[in-house]
Image 1 (cartoon, rainbow, N blue to C red):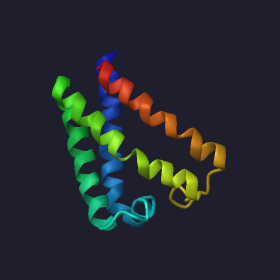
Image 2: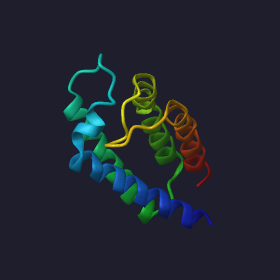
Image 3: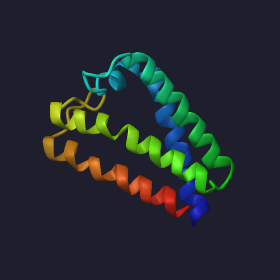
Image 4: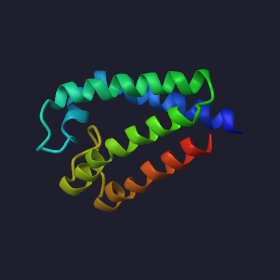
Length: 117
């Protein structure tokens, strides 16, 4: 079961990371306004997500890898909060305010799954 979850998470990370390059403006606009270098941060986080995804697909993460992945998920959490507060569309789709705020706990579900692997 863990290997299936790990593979799904790995593929999701890879897909999300690639989207950072294909749809950069969608990701840059959810970075809080006080943060400089939005485009560069979008690309860097995209690369990191692809690397994490490949890693998860190739091997079971050790304690240090789990910590780094969870730190990454925590570091990008403010972008999701900013997106909810400013009601920024998810790509071309405007989500309702409950849906935008409802996405926030999912970050912690991901972190729990990573820790469980």
